[in-house]
Length: 442
Image: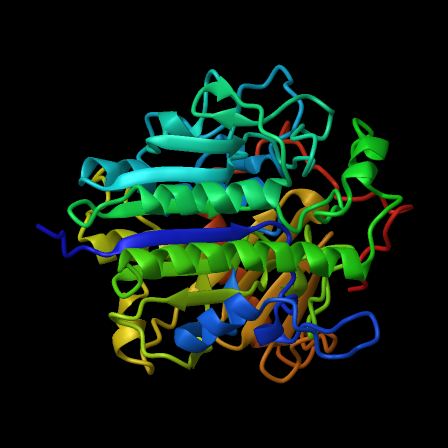
């Protein structure tokens, strides 16, 4: 007998900028409209596109803590790393296996669960997807991976099938897409599934399917600071888009598309070759360019096509939404901080009117969004922006609106006081040094 509960797929891109998709405004190097993501653009037209989707952090692994748990990432020590280092140091940091996750809660409720792609929540043997609710794992543990060598940024092999090192020739984006298709093809109607498809694309190194020789040239050198281009970057996105198309086609062939909720977003804002227009800032910034991300949701059985929403939401809200869609309660000892967005699927006017907040050790950044207003502090300097009137965050209204500034500052301080502090020893990882890439202008 078919299980009526929806299948759930969460697709996470890595370092994708807000305007890197056709449906969010992609432009090529000559400022022409760019057909880089036809399958995702079609998915947006078939479902719901958000204009104010926010990542839980401006850097990858903290956002992944929030996604995995449905809670503020700051509740767990490992999320204070910005991000968890891709080298094995003396710190044992990661997602504790005894902490409930969306995957473990769904698995215990009868869902088939799999993670395909990037983990970046701690290294084995202490941490791993199969210790945190995923029945299958095919992917890598580090913050980045070479698309052909399948190694971490230090040149060490990092490709796994469950707990075993895995060797397989091919372009990583395509391998992940095909594995996701394989997982769907193995599912049956009597058991719903939860698939996390976490791409490395379009994270550096800047390699397309045709760049195997470039992979050999840069092997083991770390960041790919002497390569790439807008054309290469957009081609990487297109490869990912094609793979997502394969997955969508597999759902159709299995007759599962109607009752499958698919969400696509990014772990943080883009960097280097990304298009974050109209926002300023990038990965590692709490400016909008670092935390405002593409966000699409499709569920034909429940979401009307062609909808656009400006309701602000965070990554962890989708964790709560998935559990609510499956009829699964959170663990009583680990209440969710995210909220379910299911009401929005039934009522386009629904808006919970709540604060969204962030903090980072990097540059002592603080931010809080309340409606159209945003409080921001960077290196001790305060800013107040009206995002509706000034999405580029150029007009600092702190002198004109001192009462509102004080109100939002106090709200951030109260939120921050309810969470564990950032440890002094927490590691900050700059994406590029100041000499390599200009910092955002505040």
